[in-house]
Each structure stands twice: as C-alpha cells, then as structure tokens.
Length: 540
Image (cartoon, rainbow, N blue to C red; front, side, top):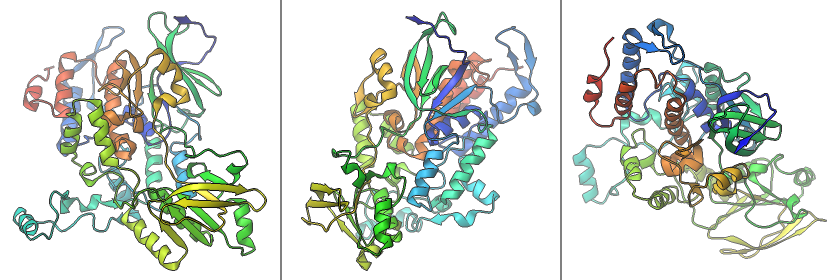
C-alpha cells in the first residue's frame, strides 16, 4: 500500500537505532574499507593484499554511466564514509553516552571484558594498541588466575591422572596473557571516542530522538517501485533504505508490582539518577542508621552494594534467589578466547533455533560476579556492613510513606529485616522483541518466529529475506551466540551486518567484479579452498 508523506527528510542509506556498542560497531564497520578478521590474523593480511591487487590492476565499471576508470592505490583511503548513515538514540547526542552515564553512576573503574572485546573494525588488538600508543597501559588490570602456567600435553595428562587438575577445563595459551587484562573505563570510552572521530561520525550523524515505530512500505515521494523504511520518532520521521536495530534489550522494569507511592522507595538500577536517594542522604547527614536492600545475583548487584557502603550507608542486605556464581566473564572462557571456532561451530551446527536457544541459556546461566568483586564482597561482609543471603526472595513488603521505610519479610535463609530505607533491583533487562513498542508495526505487517524472546532472524542478520531490517546486539543472539550481549557480539555482528548491507547497497565493496565477489567472500570467511578463490582473481 503506497503512502504519501509531506516530509522533506532525505532518504538515508542506513538508519541505525541505538548509539551503544552495537550501533557504533555497525557505523564504524560500514566506514572501514579494510576490516580486520575476527578469527585469524592471516585473514587481515590477505584482505589488504586483495585490496592492493584490485586497486593496482582492476578497473571499475561505474553503474550509472558505464564508463571505466583505473584506481590508484595511493588514492584509496582505508577510511571511507560513502554510506549515508543516520543514527538515532534516546539518551544523548554522543556515541556511548548511555553507557558512560551508567558506568559513572555505578562508579565502575574497569570493564569486565578482556582487551580484545572492543568495536574497532580495523584491528583486532585495536584497544591494546591504543593503550600503548597513548601511554596508558598503566590503566590495564590483569585478570589474576585467568591464564595459568602453560603446560605440555604430557604434564596435563599426568595432572589429570593424579587428580590435581579438573578435566575438560579451557586452556588459555600463556602467549595470550596480554589479552587477559581489562581496560579502565576512561580508556575504553576514550578509544570509542577516537573511533567516532576516525570515521567522522561525530558531527551530524547522531541525533537524540526516541524511536516510536518502524514501518516498511512504499512512500510515493521516495519510491514508486520498492518499499522503504519510515522511522517515526518523538521529533518526526526519517526515511531509509535499510534500518539496523541495535538496542540493548527491553526497557528495564521492577519484577514486582509497585504503586506510584511505593516507587519512591524502590529503584531499578538502570533508572538511578541520584545515589543514594535524597531522603536517604538526609538521614545519613544526621548520622541516622540507614539500611539498603539490593536484589540481584549479577555483577551490578555487587557493584551497587559496595558503592552504597562507600557512600556511607550503614548496612546493605544483598539477596539473590540462587547460589553465588563466580566467573571472570558472564559467559564461559570457552566462548571468550580469541579463537572461538569450536564452540561457535557447535552453535552454528545446531539444527533448530530451540537448540541454539538452549546453548545460549546454558552458556550464560544467569548472573555472576567476578573473582575481583568476590573479594570486595567478602571484605565488606567481614566488616559487618554487608549481609549476603543466598536462595532468598522477598516474601512481603510494605512501604510507610511517613517514615519512608519498608517493612520486608524474606523467604529463604532469613525471615525478617530491620526497616529498609530503599530497595534497589539489579535484575537486568528482559528479552522479548514482540514487546518492544518500536517493533509493533513490524511484528504485525511482517511477523517472524519468536524463540525465547529472541527474533528468528536470517543468517544474514535480517528480519526476513524480503525486509532489510538488520538486528544487532542482544536480540541477534540466535545468530551470534551467547556473546551477542557483549562487546564481542557487537563486533562480530557489525561485521556480518555490514557485509550484507554493502551487498544490498551495491557499493564498491561488493560490486564491480561479480564473478570474484563470491570467491572473495569464501576466501575471507575461510570457506572451502582459499587456493581456488585466489586462482579466480581477474586479470587486468
């Protein structure tokens, strides 16, 4: 059905919804002509060789005037912004602004992710290189115990027989020790800002607008023959050929119903504006006893508990419904290493989306804290200012607006608590794409299957083969695996999405030598024989 519109907004090539890691990852990858490989070092060198060979000897036929011109290798920059990109984000006009605000609120000094979890498309060790280039390697913190002493195969077998080493544990090569550091928060965000500057994404690329709906239809002012996207925001409408959904999940919500009056005494950690709340700060100012309850079993719950104590709260109660899980990362080490081929291959070989969903659930396995924060929590428990209650949930709660305290009873290790001044819910965000307000039109007009709240997108990361709505980040987990929620998922997802987008747009990256494009793709992704691909390079 054709629709008429009076809008004068230009028709964009790509509209990216979200300015977090996934959105920035897609934007930078679309601007990078020579992306680094995600799995092996030699792929990057081969790609450079291919571009140099094609630039020096191949000619390009222009699609519009059918003329040919030779390319000078010195005239082709590594950075290109040929794709017309518009990014929309509800939280600010700067890339990663939401992340920066949350990290500042939680007073997080270092990331949880290792050094090779970043979104630089040009170099897999880009963050590490940036740290050394800027003389900021002193901002890296080693993950103690993550990389053990390298043992020979004979030594490992001998230890297994003696029962001194568990079987089937992931072995991280000692030579990769440099990767198992974590960057400081300022270093990481400085690197992200550097990427935005390198690819000229700072100026008018990003707009602060809340996306309300996405439609895919024919709009006569732009095209009579093919559908395009109309992205409706709180400030107007934008039109694009392709849309990339790069958001972090459903809006956070407290997992129990609260009245408007009770909301004064409870906060989801993603909605914190002042910590602690002003009425709690007033009690602290007169040296009154203050008690805070934190609900959640992940790293954020530990960070909030520690921060509350450091800010002067008398006592913090941390409750979680299950056991305490301690992991370096929120996915197992088998999924974290630079070369994740084995686990990823098993994931991609799953015959059904249900099997993939099960692998994702098993790998992530709920919230966990790091060994570093486990020591902090234990130290606070030893001082008597923190109590951690496992296998415990809230049974009843009643808010007194006069005293501004909660009367809480628990179900688990302990039944009663002293009057609680504030409850923080560190319970994460949900995953159900069908509940996203901005996807209601898409779910109605172009329905797709739902598996555990994740959309069953295509292998090309598209909504459907006939709908060029690409999905990045958390909601792309059925294609990316359990790392989709993390920075590594943002990087790999951006790479796969960009290949598909460039192919759809018919850019220079994928046009000009159609007979060579499939061989090039197989070559770069390691499919089949690379020698066959090299044999088919066209001559001048």
